[in-house]
Length: 182
Image (cartoon, rainbow, N blue to C red):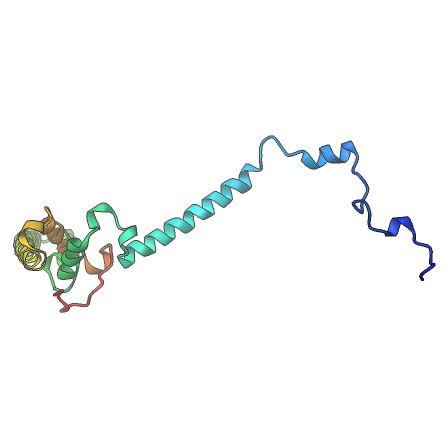
């Protein structure tokens, strides 16, 4: 039928390449005793930075898994939303203190004296606002979650949040002013 001679090298037997020598095999297996640490450290640092940035963004957005323990839970979220929905005197403490510092730089003793008096009066009003906010948050949380399930420290948590300026709060405010939680 087909009388053409066949070349034995074209049949496909064997592995199709020459066996590597012992020197070639040893050279392929050799790795440095100490890996390139600069590259590994840079890669690890970049991965850690990416994880931290993701956690920072998640915490600012109020994602539960990125929040610290003190901010976790539905009652803490409720307290944050309650505080963020209102206006509080504590937000003005830092700007007011800056004004007092500027007034104390003036060489007029009258302004210096009354600036400190006004500061202490303002601080008393801030403390009153913190107490009232704490009571209101605890009362609203009792109505929503039940008195037996109310977490300890919820009022203090809310009061401390009132003293922070709104744009500096972490987690960031999730509600607009006037949008009190139900």
